[in-house]
Amino acid sequence: MLKKIWHFYRDGFRAMVLGRTLWKIVLIKVAVLLALANFILPDYLNRNFNTAQQRAAHVLDNLTPPGSASGQ
Image (cartoon, rainbow, N blue to C red; front, side, top):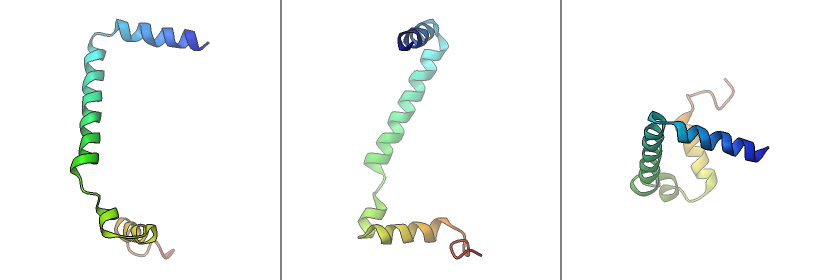
């Protein structure tokens, strides 16, 4: 069963012409986004807050509209 699935995908990717180029573009974009996230963007929460509770409170305060955390 797994061998049949593998052959299906392998043969499908071999037959692609435009699809290969598009997959390469997608993989390059993913690599660039991961590089940005890991090396360029600062780690704001770990640098500015010491505990997980402080980080969670900061995220809750900044990502939820006022009044939603209290059940209103």
